[in-house]
Amino acid sequence: MKKSIITLLVTTLLLFWTVEHKPGGSLDYYLLLKPYPTFDLFLGGGEEGMYARRVANGEFPDWLVNEQYINLAWGSWENDTKVWEYLRSGAFLAVFLGWPALLIWWLVLAVRKHLTHMSRSKVNR
Image (cartoon, rainbow, N blue to C red; front, side, top):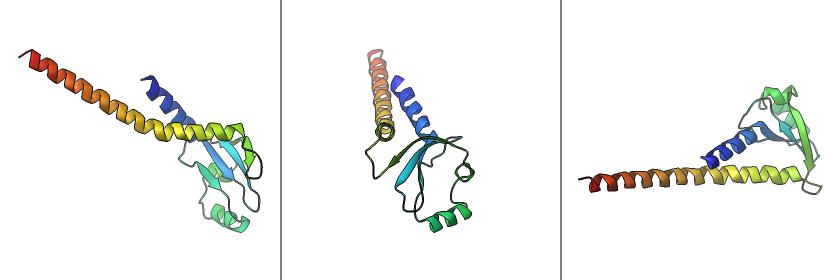
């Protein structure tokens, strides 16, 4: 149960974070706190004209276009890796390995419970 709660908390945290890549020649990106959880984990980037067209076409969420987010940290492909990048990568790893591991664990527990129940019913006959 404890593993389930931890995995759920990390998943929820990831759904509130996103990385926005700045348009143009910049290699900068920012860790943003979204106003609500979404599956947008990476946004932005590209040439400035293409970025502007994507904004005009509504390809980005309203909270990004209207700047309704909190900028938590920044990074750049040209600089050293920041601590938050390791934390975010670790959180991704925990989620993408954690959920399958939890599903397998729940399956093992269900099979074990079923087998225990079956063996008890045979003894009672």
